[in-house]
Image (tube, rainbow, N blue to C red; front, side):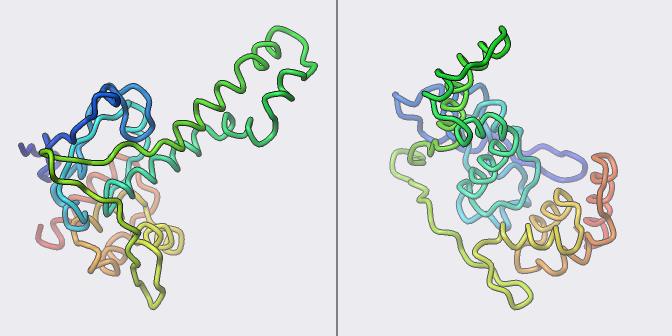
Length: 227
């Protein structure tokens, strides 16, 4: 099913991956209880760079919303970005494991109700977040026999540099040319990775956009290239 948003057709209701019985009601990305499904890719034009067919996966609310940008070549690249987002968001919790051992926390001499609460909850919070970051999900199967394999990242060349993946090249371009990342990846998704340089050229004049400005500029760029 297609629906129109800001002049661009979006995809809904991709084929849902099969969920083994022991993984029912589980987020594919982090292993937490799921409360919604996620379509990948989310928009029709993103199919220009995705290396496999569209799919739908169970997800928790946090994983479904933590990454806003587009231009991922596969569900595995998208999953990696979600993991990076979780690490950044929960850095304080994850740092517990770097600064303490479970035994050191139990033997610490913190005083006061707040510190006592930290002693009791810190290590379980760290272990829970560690498990979410390390979680790999189950094999992706559709209609009993179609499996999407996790392939190694494809190299991507830009300006004579061979990047290990398209995502690495995107990160480099955003930092080097001071691009608005969400705008750039949306435009790149429309044009396709073969027009990486053109996407940079179209976006260089629009850094640091608000959400409202970004939508307006995106439609303006689409109009300028006849889409």
